[in-house]
Image (cartoon, rainbow, N blue to C red):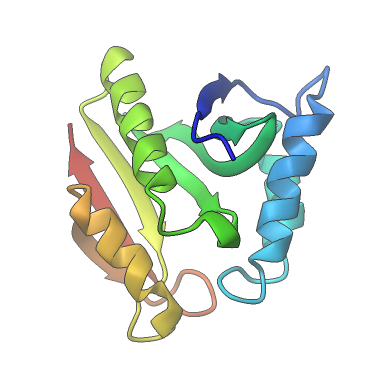
Length: 159
């Protein structure tokens, strides 16, 4: 099996004309991870988000292994969904993808990126997620118990 990866930016992949291969690949990953991390609405919401959000995809042999969906909000880039196929987690693919995202953000002139995640004290499966973001320089800015079903942590990273 090759270890060569291709990371590519897709701008609004579900806008006209839609990139069905990319949209379906992202949907399938989100669907497969729903029981572990995401609520049932996430895959379908993601399809709609991809009409307006951009995405970096990490592929090997034309198969999406990891993706990072983002948009601009309030003067910074915001990660709206980030996932790696379960069988490829822990291999550094997410790190490769997020570093590419940071470089892209800097090249666009952004100084800050943000992400929200579920608090691990509410849903322990998110412990590794929070540690991943902290390892990559994100700091918890605030906690909101009013967002999502289980609350949310808002994290920022200065580039």
